[in-house]
Amino acid sequence: MNVWNTACRVLVRHLGESARLDHALEDVPGQMSPADRRRCRHLVYGVVRHLGLLDACVQPHLVRPPRPVLRAALLTGAFEILENPPQAPAIIHHAVDRAREVASPAEARVVNAVLRKVVGTLAAATAVEPAPGDVAALARRHSHPRWLVERWLGALGEEATRQLLLWNQSPAPVHARVAAGDEVHAGQGEAPASFRSTRWPAYFLLDRPDWSEVERLLAAGRIYLQDPATSVAPDLLAVQPGEVVLDVCAAPGGKTLQLAEAAGPGGRVVAVDLPGLRLERLRENLRRYRAVRDRVKVVACDGRELSPAILAAEKQPRDYDAVLLDAPCSNTGVLRHRVDAKWRLGAADLVELPKLQLALLTRAATLVRPGGRLVYSTCSLEPEENTGVVDAFLASREGETFTLAQARASRPWADGCDGAGAFLLRRRTTS
Image (cartoon, rainbow, N blue to C red; front, side, top):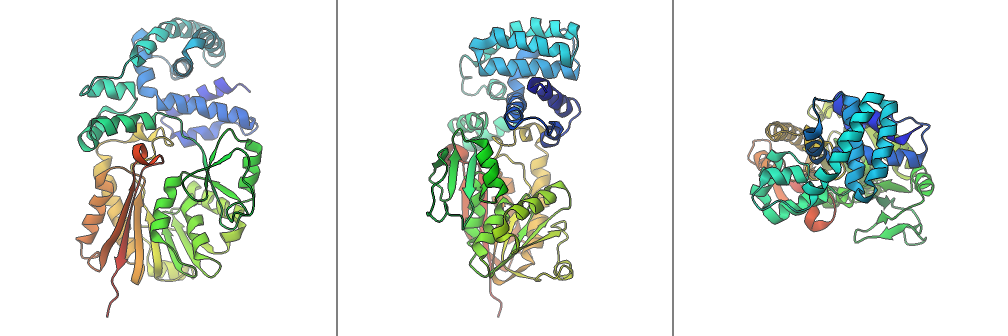
């Protein structure tokens, strides 16, 4: 089963049929070896990450718009050239052979002719960094929508924006968080040789790991693959042993597991999310993490509709010591991982998303006990989704019993991990 051909098919579904990238990747055959699956994912992610630059270097050499499968073949070959220019002749030869299989002999000839020209076009496009103020060139060179680059230049400044763009365009390293109670977490055992310690407690950087060993540790519930920034919100909530905790928008469950670990054997976590594939992933993760799964109750519900009555019907508490709302957002802090999000995002989303986030926050606040805590968090860098939502909530009738106790932010170019915003709100004790 050819990896290159499979990557082209995934790209056809994503680019030609507008399927979300994670859904398109589900088409990768299950019988493909783990190493081949990683290579396929690398090719697909590389094309989508650099899509703006690759398209800009391919399109001028085409006489007419290509079929989706031809476009996928051209982009895959162009990405490999971008990644390894000295190997361009061998890459082109391989791409032509593969194009005969995924497309047609005539289109294979197009691949040959176009990629030979793309070598020089890519070299020229990447030779120097765009001049300050050249927004179009900066967006094209670093494959981001122009409106988003323009926005960041205004909000973050030239230097920080360039650092952020470079960060987003680098393949994301893999981090593993060791589960609480594991012998490595407790300092009583040694981590695998490929696990490099980091400045974040319980987090290891996987440096050329033995993936069969990683799969074994995952299946045993000893590690969870996640970026260190995912700990910002749970750490701010600071769940204490024995507390009853509500996790809204919980799937796929990385933060849920951290909350359950902190709550301890005497605590409880109610994890809420919309029914669907993400919620099933949460259930599957809980099945693996046997040490905490009995502390977590999963409830399928839209967070905007969650109420004491619905929770009571599920035989769960009506209010909580601590509530975490990790709200759906633009993902601008995690574009290194979610490489297609920048192409799906539009300026209008930064108007609509805060409305959803405020609705979720307003509903979550009704479930916090007097004296309790609520953390609102996103993986966005945009102020409209962070301080804008929190300020609007505190100014509302529903937020008048809450005060902002603390706020934390993670900036990728400064902190070396994904971007995140988290806000600790405390509910005043009523007399």
